Structures are given as structure tokens and as C-alpha cells.
Image 1 (cartoon, helix red, strand yellow):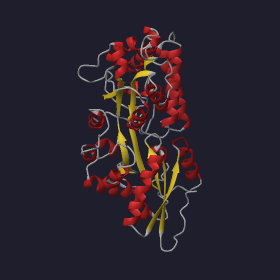
Image 2 (cartoon, helix red, strand yellow):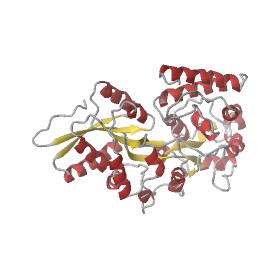
Image 3 (spheres, one colour):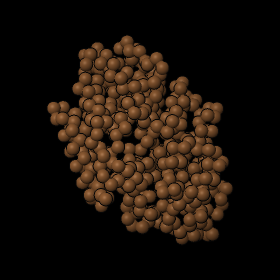
Image 4 (cartoon, helix red, strand yellow):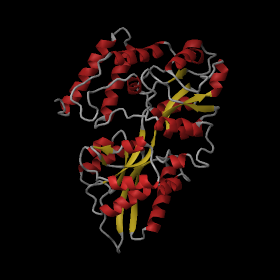
Length: 408
């Protein structure tokens, strides 16, 4: 388990839990070796998990009071642990790192709760649109002249690309698979609750929400979009990489899978813009330090080192990751091997503060499921008025608030 072993032979041991690919594991091993060389009295014990097993394992450790000294935290479940008072405040450590090399504002914002940093940003990026250039050429579809994606452009271009519309000679099965419905809600200015940090009432029933639902129904009814609004990013990436779609809306982690698996020419463009914004889902990973660590100073030293610019550069030799430091993004060689404009597209999404999490509090995964299920039902039943669908979603969210004892 992740219990902290007693000191042995004068060594202080720090446990670190993380997820990732084999290359991520090699990168972390290299960083740990460098840390131990600089801190000979400390040993880092690595606990590596597959992504699908990581959160359940961490929740088990938390329930048993055996959290690791330092742990990776995704934006999707950061608040699950922040709300339990099991994360140590690391504001001073974050400010020290930021003084060494300024971080992107959204990376910093993602770890602050009530004015205190409860994590150290490790990586953070918004999203982009990846385009199958061969598919567009085969269909005679031109790219947007200004390089910026909009839903209007996609609706106009999609029919010629999709076999569901244009027939068997079209280059792909569907022009695209939808992002999570919450993305379209956010791009239309929809708020699920009155206060995303401390919700007191549901606010989802609005003209903006009806418009977002209408767009989702329209693109699926046209035959241009994959009909399942519940596809996860991994499924959407696999569909795109095998040539099943012409456009992919994704975060940076998906880009490496595209680069390894796609057998066609592709390029990166901005995330599609909605009426209110071009907001993309936020991919943010941070490091949390256990408030119950038996070796708190050593744990913070390791977390600071792992999140530092030097460690990020070292890890970058083994694995692709999106840094929180513009200095590294702008450095020579960072974008080698990637399409032109790649770094600029992702940097824009962060500088504009456009990337946002679906929800800033505990219960992200549950809320995402509720919204995706209701939208999928609405797509399957186009005859049901939007207000009825939103009333059903409102009831779901009210019950969720009631279960959490959050209704004021």
C-alpha cells in the first residue's frame, strides 16, 4: 500500500502515487533519480497505476487513512480530495515555483480554493481541433480561411465529408464525434448552478441551454455527427485515428495517440467557437501533498522538485506533456515533430483563459454522466420539447444537490 514506511538507515521515505503510460513511468523514474541525487537523505517510492484504476485506488487509500505523501490529481477529481481536508496547503511552494518561471494563469487558478493553493500545477492545457487533411481534400472541402473553427463552419462542411449524408464515396463515417455536451453548454453561456463553487439552486433552464440543446440535436439529425453524445475522449480519438471522422476536438494528451496511430496528414486548429466563447475542456493535472504525511517537509520538497521547470524539461525527454510554463513552450525544440501552429493553438487556449473545467466542485464525474445521459435521450427523442428535457435535467441536478445537502 501507500503507507509511509518507517525511516530506515537514516533515510526518509516519501511515497508518490501517479498514473500514466510506460513512457510516463520512465519519465517519473528519471525525475525521482535526479531528486534523490540532489537529496541523498530522501528516497521516493513510486506507486504507478493505470489511469482507469487510479482514482478507485486513491479513494480506497483515503478511506483507510493511508494516502500517499504526494499524489497526482486530475481536474475531474481534484475537489473530491480538496473538500475532504486531506490536502496540505502549498501556497508558498507554488509562489516559489512561479517566481522561478511564471506559470500560465489558468494553471494557477485551477489549484486555488478559498484563496489557498491545495496543489502544485504539473500540466495544464485547453483544447484544439485536429483535422484529417486527406479527408477534406478527398471531399473537396476547404479549411476556414482564418484558421479558426466555428460550429457554423463545421455544419456547412460536414455533409460532404460524412458517409451518413453523402453516401459511400464520402471519405469518413461521420464528420466528427461530439465533445461532451457540457462543452456546448459552456460555449452558449449556460450555468448549471447559481454558484459553481457552492451551489444553492439549479440554473440550467434558460434560453441559452435550449439553444445549446438545439445545436446538438441539429448536428446529429443532419447525419454529420456521431449519434452517441456519451463517447469519451479515448473513444473519439480512436475513431479519428482510424479514419472514422474528419475532425477531432481534444486536449493535448490525445495528441500523442493521434501522432502514433494516424496514417494520414493532419493539422491542428483552434477549438470550435460557440455563441458565447470558444471554451474547451480544461486538462489540468496537479500534485497534492497529504495533510497527514509523516514526513511533510520531504513530501513538499519532492512535490516542488517534480513540478519545477527543470523536472518538467527532464521528463520531456521521455514523454510528451504540456507544461504550465510558457518559457518551456516557447523554447527551441519543444514543438519539434509536431505540425505547424501546434504549440500556438494550445497556448492561445490558455492565454485567453478559455479552457474551463465542466464543474469546479466535488461530483464532476456524476454531473457529467447526468448531463450526457439527458442529452443522449434528447437526441434520441427529437420530438420532446427542449424545455421538457431541461426540466428533467433540472430535476436530476436538484436531486444531486439534495443528496449532498447543498440546497440553501
